[in-house]
Image 1 (cartoon, helix red, strand yellow):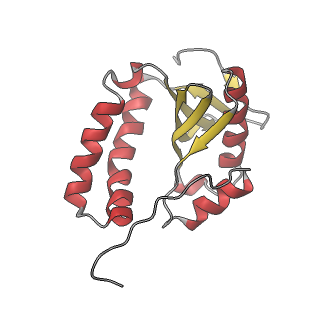
Image 2 (image 1 turned 45 degrees about the horizontal axis):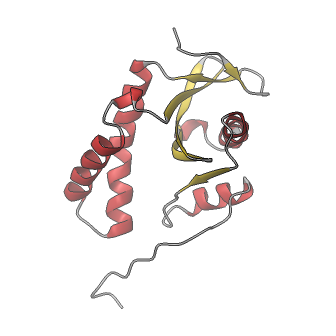
Length: 165
């Protein structure tokens, strides 16, 4: 049984529910597989170091796991099938998308866009005046998706790999 209230999107057969402990564990497992690869690419560090950094960062960000204050975990369902998950973090008057993941086989079907609309409504209900996120520049599809969803670049972190140019 899912904790919290049922949160239904205005999409036939699509629901976003508060994650159970089992779903949270699946979400963290997926993140621990994918995030180090992104860190390694973005910061030009060996994959093993990126895995160590990811583990350390997650321990700092989520000392109480799923029950860490200001962090909210949701699972996205379509036709009762798990399509992805969301990790949202509230900072003062902003809701931050710590992670949004839609399974590859369910992408380009409008699920992510509808999830973003739901996140914006959730932010308003929480008294937030903005929604923020980070996206890796080596993921142009995600950057374009967020741009189409109303996000604008607010700052940029740049990195120069020495010995290349």
